[in-house]
Image (cartoon, rainbow, N blue to C red; front, side):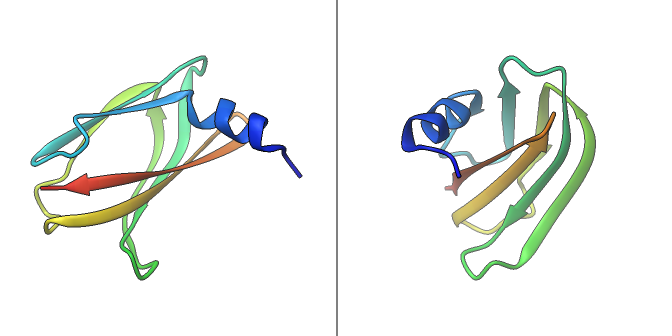
Length: 88
């Protein structure tokens, strides 16, 4: 189990911008060389996007997503991070 402090530290390692977004969304994973896996889910937990073996800075095309709230899970170098995305 991780503490709240540890979880906040892990979450602060990932920047997403712009957020809210309309087309592309950029990810910047600080202190990491790569991203093993990125999964984007809708509010019901349905997997909508799945990417593997990404660099530490990358963008995804969000044009296929309808306006709303989404969640992402990023794993890499033994860590799993989660966050929220908002499509305008």
